[in-house]
Amino acid sequence: MCGIVGYVGPRDSQAILLAGLARLEYRGYDSAGIAVIDADGDLELRKRAGKLAVLRDDLQAHPMPDGTTGIGHTRWATHGGPTDANAHPHLADDDKLAVIHNGIVENYADLKAGLLSDGYTFLSETDTEVAAVLLGHEYRANGGDLEGAFRTTVSRLEGAFTLLALHEDHPGLVVGARRNSPLVIGLGEGENFLGSDVAAFVEHTRNALAIGQDQIVAITPAAVTVTDFDGDPVEVEPFEVTWDAAAAEKGGWSSFMAKEVSEEPEAVANTIRGRIRDGAVAIPELDGLDDLFRDITRIIVIAAGTAAYAGMVGKYALEQWARIPVDVELAHEFHYRDPVIGPNTLVVSISQSGETMDTLMAVKYAREKGARTLSICNTQGATIPRESDAIVYTHAGPEVAVASTKAFVAQITAQYLLALHIAAVRGTLPANEIADSLRELEAIPAKIQHILDTEQERIEQFAHWMADTRSVLFLGRHVGYPIALEGALKLKEISYIHAEGFAAGELKHGPIALIEPGQPVFVIVPSPREAALLHSKVISNIREIHARGARVIAVAEEGDAAVLPISDEVLHVPIAGPIFQALLTVVPLHIFAMGLATAKGLDVDQPRNLAKSVTVE
Ligand code: F6R
Image (spheres, rainbow, N blue to C red):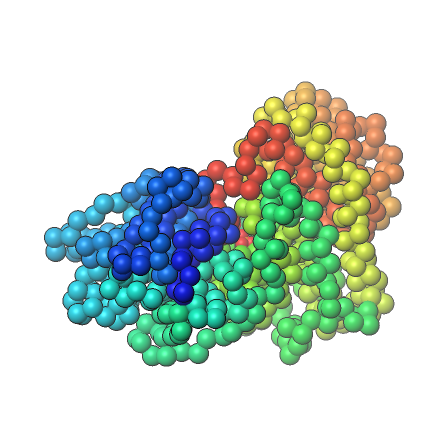
């Protein structure tokens, strides 16, 4: 939440900052602002409530002097509404100092009280302005050492923050700090960048440095220095960004979500690529973990939202293939009870962004309790993998639309690989069955592509007809249950329609009371050929709702004749084994949610009230 970008170098910074913010806008779009030190050495500020486009238009209509040192911010509001005054950057030290922030300063009220009694005044309701004023105060107190003042200031802040600051007395310098919020450095030729993630600067450089927890960075055109909060130098890890700027562009697509749904086959294929050798899983990141996989008695998967639904799907695979008990926990619930975990527990976190605060806190907590941690993550240099003992990256490529789609199928794929690997290590599945499952997994991208090629248009048309619907239910069994939850989440998230997902077997225990004539119900139908028993149970569930007048939309295997007489609409998927079917049945649901939101004229990439990277608890 909140996107941050910083630049120092020979070029004028406004265009660079605005382009960086455009790539980070998925992190929040309540307001946007930039501050630059202009050619005369004066600090220039422009900030506006609303999306980045409002700021852009304003700068076009009323140009602001440019300069070669700058910071920019796109906001997801926490403290104070989305107004011009609350927009970042915030100024201090007689408007010579500008600060931007991502996170929450938890002790801001105490700090503010102290500063008020010292005679300082505030223009906004934000916690960020408190940090800015405190920094200005420390800067005056230490005689103008910006880095020193920054160190003193961040040491007094509690909570989670990425902070960037610049001061007009120090052109060519941007300082930054991070605690529990992301910040990465981009290394250019005679210029350097800071960003909430590499998207902020990937069009200029793919050479990056990941800053660790509680570290401070100072960038000038010629140098980057990183220290801890005590001022001692620290080593930082270089990495090369594996995707290029074009991957994070919309291209010819109407939305990022449309592009990302179209990339679902590729997300699965890329997550598998190079990780299967001679009919076995070969993931170098898992080398050396065999003893751990043999010793664990339990796996707890922690995640939030869509990633948690991916975890629920993964549970079926891990339990069936690796024969380990698996619990899937919402990260925010896991952390604040007293879970029973220890050295024989493997905590697997799943996160597209690798920055979700709830998940990060749960991972840290699990480590404190002695559990081993493995992160399934889509974002290089992110915090959660850095805080984990092991990492399996999903290779879905940058996901920009707020609603997660291609990352979801990649997260499931990574778990299937993990489950088959652990099964091999523990000897719970014969080698030939592992090889068969891997072959089936390798066939999935083409099957997803087949759905996109043959069903997408029809599903979009169907979604269009349903644009006035006020409530949609989703039912599923086995892996179809988390897919039903995912279908419901996606619909409410981007179309603002009430939607609920249920386990189909649970229907008769209460939710069936919701069924009235015309109620649309999506039902995820297992394969009649691969999962005959499950299939017959779901057919019975469809009969129960059909008899009560529900409008049944079945997501069913091609050629499934049993669904035809009891469904109003059938969305087809190719044949797949019971576990693999999850990777197919979700695709029509993603298309449907996108189609319906589009039909309602909504912005599918930036749904209201949301941000992609949820870096507050
Ligand atoms: C829904 C969605 C969210 C995220 C959740 C976790 O479409 O995108 O529910 O899945 O906020 O985010 P990550 O995976 O970044 O930890």
